[in-house]
Length: 284
Image 1 (spheres, rainbow, N blue to C red):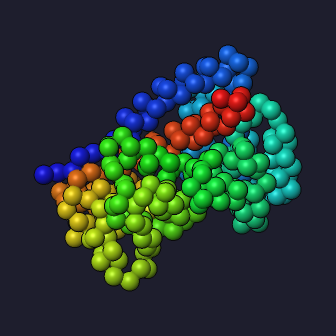
Image 2: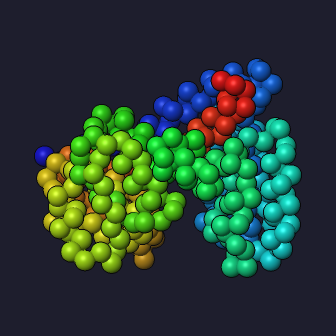
């Protein structure tokens, strides 16, 4: 029997309807949730991501602003702007679109954002809070995956979970969230020896390795929950994930499609983090 679909697009729409109400309540108190997105350079993918983030904010009644700098801008200019935004009371969230040009120290830029406005969840204070099981801001993509587990009624406690990918943006925080939920977690990557031995015993697989159709049906235990975080463009222009969807859906119990799975949840949880930041500011 084919796997059930964890529909990120539908869940994102459901959550955003609730965000409208929360944003309206804050606005009525004079605390309209505000997000500023900083884009350096002209990377086409980054431009699309930023456009979508700003549009999503406006659609739920939030204040949003996009600041664009040329690729050769001095890092000090961006750092000074971040300092201004840290002090701006109408701004509750600050996001610097990654990747940055090579002459930037990405870690220094992310650390310059005030921890209470770090709605991407990348500041060391927020990473540490997540590691301690007391998260304040959760990185948006893993946060979205956890919401999908909850929507699907997936019980994580006591389950074997394998995360393929070890990035600071997805792999590592995903592993921490699964650990905090009571799962037994193995973190692998594309160079892990005997990778299939790990994945075949997993009740939960989260693929975030950046390789098209990397996870195949023979790597998946029957009845597993398979989350595909990847998004890859094939030579013919079509999109696919890190999971070979057509074969794996015949083995798994639950699976996320690409597109329409995890992707819509990432921006949705950015909105959630920004609203949560404004609510904390309001004492809610």
